[in-house]
Image (cartoon, rainbow, N blue to C red):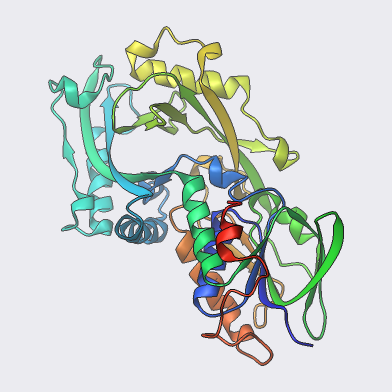
Length: 402
């Protein structure tokens, strides 16, 4: 049986987009199956940051921070229209749980991991008398303010651009379409899906599940399943307020010690995020009144000019879902490492990507490609290096749907 595709990627969020881009660049014939629209889920509901994850140093995730900083450097250099450097300010108060010396130590390690001589790694303290630089911060009991640099992006726009790159490399986007079932046979993976009002079938050598919060639901439709560890969905809410505070991002400490970002967004200010376990249909996730009040209290604590704002004056609010390993510890301290799970470690046909960060989507894609390459290079595949766009619809026409 000739394969219609080497790989079917299910899910067109940033992880699915990255995997499709990497596979097409390696010369494989790829289809992307998406049930709603590109960047429909978490990939349009994140904190919009391309960063190393300064707070992950506290939980010892050094390798993750190093990987993300490398990816940040690449994205700044190669996607300057979508990813741009922004100053971040960390205020330290008498009530803060982390003393100034601890913040300086963390920033020093962060700079070391980014490369000491990189312009992106520099940090310094800001004078408490420099009111313009402080951007309206509450000065009561303020001990120190540190400035360093990370990056910001439009998460949905970045995802769409990566999908476009995959399409230009020969991938085909089937959207909207829902997976009905996938079965590994002795010759291929047979995939049934619903699209254009009818049941369709395609054949491929491997399926990659990049459906984010729907990962377990999608895995249940595969036979055999990928071996997933116990997972938990964690909801994160953001609020948008109709004020422009500054052209910088503030990294503040909420009442429970969690890190919250206050950042410019669409001419206003975005505040987030929260973390709470979520049980239910991923499509139904929404901000709770408690989460919105928590974020608004945090904003008012640090920026006195926002204190008249009421919950009914928010410009917007949204919630997204993270996939984290199940644990008894609070979500804030859990590992953010991407989990790549397979039905068979030696010759995988079904691969599932659990978790993953916006910043490190390329690194995740490389790991998936490494897992699949031995299987894809054994007879009957679309030869690497000969991949060209083959869909009946021209590439530029398909891109108009993104």
